[in-house]
Length: 562
Image (cartoon, rainbow, N blue to C red; front, top):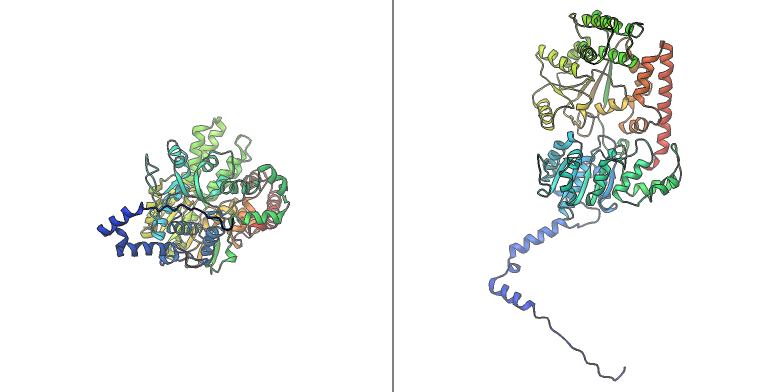
């Protein structure tokens, strides 16, 4: 090719000239120094100046962000690319971590449209926290919402999957999906799982303190929502990692795979100085009238004229330890629904007669004594709605402000009751269902008027006040009536497994993953069908040994969560 002359054709693009001269003549926006400065500041504020830096932090000076929360947000954004399971133990602030990640992505211009699916009782709480703590304009849809109208939406999963909401939501393209209490998606055959799987999403956060509750496949299904194929197919996953229900194979490999998509912080690993739990076990002595009612119910189990289920009679025993109102309400239901012969009718009528006598409630009297001594806000947990009604009346008779809180309340009423408790009332009387999602760090005293039989439920109650943001030591009062089923539970179970000394996360692993035995069903059956105190002791001791053995086993199995 040397010496040969080459011909090249050069063409000039002049299409820019008209626009250029138009801007010159009209002093176009590129010459507006204010516009330039605004554009420059926008780019500077949304760009990451240094590695491992979150741009949103300087815009949240009012928010206390703990080191483990900051580290989690960085890890999810920089290493997991916005697809992660946040599996911190209860009370460590998974909501804060999720809000921080959402805020960061919004400021970086990566998220403009997000859908947050939470339990119905937590919708308002999420909206408030995103609005007030992160300045994120989140909204909760009301009736007949236009799902394409809002950018940041908080909704319950039940509302979202309901037609026509589901159809409208599935038409949206979301940048980020956040799902609280994600362990409820463990079953891939449910409509909830199928709905979440169909959502159009770029990033996804799953929040749960118990990513595994029963079997190893549950973590597979959760991760498959985030990154399909990350753990292979369902068949190959079982072949590679599960030898049987109690033995995992290729543990190191599974650990490495899970850690790519899951962050789990434990209390002992944080730099937080937790306030103390001060436990007070109060043994209550029945009044004479209360003892007669309880003894009468006990004797009903041995009556040849009564053909009731032993578990039904055990329910009456438990209710008698709470209030005569709880017993009376159950008897009224029996009269309306059960077919009883004349002998059974007489036995029930005699019990009602015993209930109608004027008597004191010694538990209520003890609660009154504690409340007057503390001169502080107190939350009382009861297992029965009838007892809740009674306690509200009882405290009003003693000129104390008490408000109820239960699962049947609508979202707006729950929010109102919580606000009343924080600003005006001294006492909140809550049922088990009503406790879900309540954050009451401003309260420092809790009374377990009726003991739950599952230690995990007890820990969940305590977690309402003993969590991040609690500034004082919390006082937990556990009521148990002397020489009753309650005393057995307190002495033979709670004290043996040292439930008050265990952290929530440990109980999650020990009790929530309890395979083969329904904890409360076993305990109820033991109490209802034991023919002697010695037989009952043996059965509860067996249960205790199982729990402690399971705890050791679960710690070994869950190394990849550390």
